[in-house]
Each structure stands twice: as structure tokens, then as C-alpha cells.
Length: 584
Image (tube, rainbow, N blue to C red; front, side, top):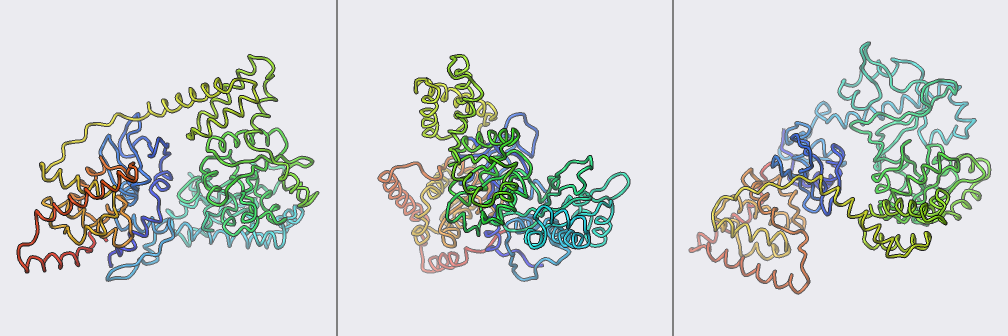
């Protein structure tokens, strides 16, 4: 079979942000410009594994593993290079092209691709089951979810049988694929269906692919949990998904208002869309997470939390408020009044009543202050201090100094406390949270001395500066050939930097790793120890640095300039042929 084309490898890497991919395997914590976690490749008590979004690389300072997003999947999933590329291609929606051979056959497709196929197969089955089950149809009809609504939203039904779906699945899919979907499980007595006696709601990712299901019991007297979701697995991660998120990209109301409506339940969202509020989404039965807020922010400038007016809804509202305020989101809180939830309000009083609720939405920080005023007697100094400590803890988690200051001013007015006192409390909490994060970091061991002597160190320094000022590569290629480097691995690395600039107009360290040898990978790791991306320089200083870098490149080229016409022709030939891939 042919090799994966170089262009496809780069497309796969670009489609799979390294932070997003590694986050799907291990929980990353942001510290400064990077993300940290206990290394997944060796045992440790404090994090020494760091992921750089700007470089698109990872590095462990404990066991010294280093690589890009493809390397991580290879190491974590125990896959070879091609298998990892195919897996990430499925994840990123990339169609691979090959050199000198056919693409993968149906049998060779990744488990993820087969699992997605099985999800669509299951959806067809759930829809067919609904068409045959009168009680399920009547239930949806009574709730205003029958007919076209059920069809538009893909609502289905899972019969109350233990082996119906699993028996059919085993005839069509392999066991690894079936387990990856979470639709069927294998116990001591064999296979059984996970969803039974329930209305099913397909849950899709932002690209519209079914990655899981939510399901509601049809029998109100059953003792089982009323709502269940697919289990966490290869496809489904409920903390990072939103129900109906696939519809936001085409939402007309979102284009008009710039705000995403976050509701509590599936039926709330469906009713909102039916009433013209097609910017509504919902968490998947869990408290609102930072990942879900970040996902919503991809689509809108602001977020409005639309929550039930009962005690449970208000408790959920406060949890959500803490998340959005810590993240610095433009957020409002809309509380349902005169009805149980958005679904009931829309059914009983119509879109106008719901719009009135949205119009009355309060700023999230104002809402937080109102909650504290109801919880504490702010006229009593002891109670006011408790409120101040709670506010300081929340505000102190924000990474934005300006937001911390602005929140502190508002809090000072509400609590009738000097602004300086509030800001001092907030900054003390911020320092405490920052210190706690720093304590989790493992001390970095001394980097082993790089080989090659003074000449190699000089060549590394030139490459470091080229990473910081990559636009110089546009002219460097005409004067400095890769063969001018005495250290072959550094010359190879320089060649790939030129290729990256020629092809994409940028040089991302993680993009180079899939195209260089092991020695060049080691040199790249050494260079990255000292670079700053982007370079933290003023305009005038940057221009002077670039002029010096051009001089150094000319000097390096002069040291190895061809002596004869035949030598010059050889350099030109090698320049034209330098784009040969290493691992494609």
C-alpha cells in the first residue's frame, strides 16, 4: 500500500490541535502559556508533562518524551505512524491521499470510523422502532414532540428488550467497534443492550456526526434513572459536548443577537428551536463545564444561561455563573418565571413570554451579587466578610488582571467596602491559586549537554533565531543551503523549516516532527529549549535582530560557499530536491 502523502500528514496535523487531542486522553491544566499534567508515559506525583499550543508539541521533563500530536497518539494508543495518522484523520475529518498505492480498505478503517458508522446504523434502528411503537409515539405527541418534530430531531425508541440491538450488531460489527460505541455491553452472561424502554435523542458533535445518545424512560413508574446518556468512551465525552451544537453554525438568531442560549434539557432546546430560538443548546445532564463554555464561545460573543426557576435551577445557575465569570465570558442569567422550565413556558405562553424572560436577563456578576445578598446579611460585618471571602475566591481564579480589578470595584460597591480592601483580598486569592498550581509542577532537571561542540552550538543558535523570525526564511533559502550546516541533523532540520515556509508561510515546530529523522528531532528539541514564540521584542528591537540574523546567515553561507561551477550546480540541484519527505 502507498505511503500517506506529505500534504495529507500536514493537513491531519492542522486539523488536530495538540491541546484538544491530548485533553481528550488526560486532563490538562493551563499554567501560563502552556498546559500541564502528570506524564501519561511514566509514574510521577507532580506534573512534568507540558503541552505548548504555540509550538504544537509536548515535552516531559521527567522522562524526556517529546513530540507532536501524531507522536502522542502513536505512543498513547500503541499505534504505528500510519495508524495514528488515519485515526487523527478520522477525528479531524481529513480525507487522506496516498503516494503510489490505494487508500485503506473498509476493513482497515479505524475503530473510530467504524464506531461512527455503527452510530448511524443504531439511529436508523431507533427511528424504525419508534415508527412501530404506538405508546412511544403517543408519549411524544402528548409532549408536543411528535410528527415533524420527532423527524427533524431524529427522536427514536429503544424497545425494552435486552438483546435486540446487540444480537443485530454482532452480525454487522466487530466487538471492538461495538464496545467503542457504548450502545451494547458485555457482561458475565453475554451481550446486552444499554438503552432499553426509552425515547432516544441523538447527540451530535459540531460536525453533525452522531457520537452518543440521550435517552428518557417511557414508563413513568419505572425505578430506573429518568434520563441516561451514552457512557464516556472513544466518541462520547459529555463534559465537552452540547446538545444541538451542530445547529449553531447555521443559527439565524445567533447571527442577529450574537448570544448562545444555554438551557438545561433536551426538550427545552427542541421547544426553543421550534419557537424560532435556534441559538439554544444544552449541557448533557451535568453541571456546566469550562469546556462546554469554550465550545459555545466559538459561535457567539456572549452566553445567556436560561435556567429553571426552582431551587435546583437556581443552584445550577450559580454553578454556571462561577464558571463563566472565572473565564471572563460576557454572560447573562435569564430565570424562568410563571412556568416550570423553558419547555413549559414556550408551550403554555408562547415565544413572546420567553422573549420577555430573555429581555429581563441580568448580568452574571449582578446575579452573583444578588445571590450573596440573599445568602448573607451584608449589614453585619461578619456576614459581609464571609461574602467578601466567597467573592474573592471566585474572582481570584480569573487569569485576567483587568477583570479582577473591574469585578473588585463592583464588589466593593455592593459590599460597602473600600475598593482597595476588596482588590487586596482578590489578589491574595489569585496568588494562592497560582501558588497551588506552581506546587504541582515538577522541578525541571538540567538538560543534558548538547553534542557537537562550538560549531554545532552556533548553528543551533542560528536556527533558534530563525524560529523567532521565520519570515527571514524567505530570503535565507537563496543564500544558505542546508548543506552549509556541519551538523547533518541541523541541516536536515533547516531543510524542513524551508519547506514549511515555502508550503505554508509559517514554521510550527510540531509540524516538522513528522518529516525528520530521529537525530533531527533531537536537535529540534534542543533548539526549542531556548526559543520564544512569538519573540517578545519591540518593533525596533525586532528589526535590528532580523538584520543581525541576516548577517549571521550570510556568514554561515560564506563559510561553506561552493568553490566551482559544478559545486554550485550541485547546491541548486539539492535545493530543488530538498522537499523529499521522511515519513510520509
